[in-house]
Length: 447
Image (tube, rainbow, N blue to C red):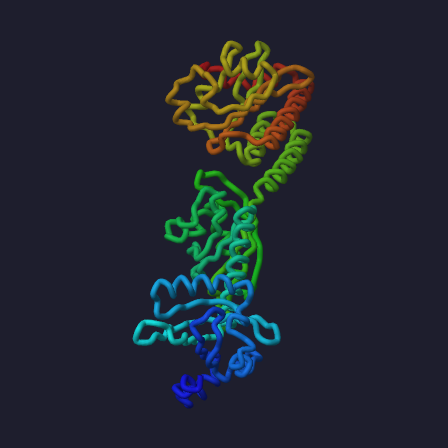
C-alpha cells in the first residue's frame, strides 16, 4: 500500500483534495477493498482510515439499489477485455445523504496481463443530475400542459409583432389542436398561413385596429370576439384573450393569444335575439310584403342558413314565392311557383318540417341550375296555423351539410310566428287582398 501511495505525486494529491473529484485505488477483488483514497473523501463524511483499515469497502458506500447493477455492468465490461469502464450510480455519504457520481475505472495489469489494481476517478455529478431531473420534470409538465390544451377547446397562439396596422401576424407557435379548425400547425410555421388569413374578412380590419390601439396605449392584455373561417369554409366565432409581450424598452415584441370557440354561445344569442326581433316586427307592422322581407333577412342573420325564400299558399293549394334572398335569378325563377302536383309542394303540404341534403330532393328542375347553385343543407318548413298550411319558409346553406338542432327549433318557431301573422292579416285586409300580393309570381315556370 505504501509503495502505491508513494507513486502518487503530492501536488496531484493537493489538487485533487480541492475538487469534487475523488481518487481510489482498489484491489482487484470482490467488493473492491481500498488501497488508497484521496483526502477529500472527507466531503462524504468518511476518513481515509475507514477504508485503509478495511472497516469499509468501496461497495459498502454504493447505494444498495444500484449495487447489483454496478457489479453486473463492471464484470461484463471487465470480462469483455475493456481497460476502462464508465458507470453512473449513487453513493451514500456517512450522514446518509445520497450523491450521484460518475465513476471511471482504469484497470492496471502486470506484464502477464493479470490486474494489479483498479484506479477509480469518481466525479460528483449530483448538481448535474438535479438539473437533468428538473429539466425532465419541466418537459413532463410541458407535455402534460400541451396534452391538456390539445384536448381542450382552447387553441394557443404566439404571433410575431409587426408595426404596420394592416399586419396579419406570422405565427411562432400554435397548439396542435388547431386541427379543430381544419388547419395543421405546420401550415402556420411554414408561412403558408398567417393568423390574419383565417380571420373573417368583415372582421379583420376591426381586429387589426383594436390590437394596434391597445398596443400603442401600453396595454398588456385585452380580449375581443370575432369570426374566423375554418379550412372547410365554415364560420366560427371565437373569443380571443391577447397578451402583449414587451421588451425592456416597452416595445411590443410578440403576442400570445388564447382562442376559445364560442360559436354555440353566439348561435344561442343570435337565435334568442332573432326570435325576439321577429316577434316585435310581426306585432308592429301591417305591410305584409315588408314584413316577409324583414323576417327572411333576420332569419338568415342566425347563421348556418345563408339563403332562402318564403311562399304563400293560394286558395288552390299552390305555393307562390313572395320573397327570396341570396339565391341566383335562374334558381329563383325555377322555384318561384309550386303547383299542387310539384314535389316540393307535396313535401311541404305534409305539414312536417323536412331537413335534408339538397341533393337528396328529387326535383324536376334543370339539373345544371341546381348544380350551379351549390346548395348543401336544406330546411323545408311549412307555415302552419290552426292546422292550416299557409305557406312555407324554405332555407338553405352553401356551407353546412346539416342544420343543428337549436337552429331547427328557432326557424320552426319563426315559421309558427309567421303563421299567426298571416292569419291576422287575412282577418284585417281580407284573403283576396293578401293573395293579390302573390299574383306577380304566377308567370314563372313550375318545377
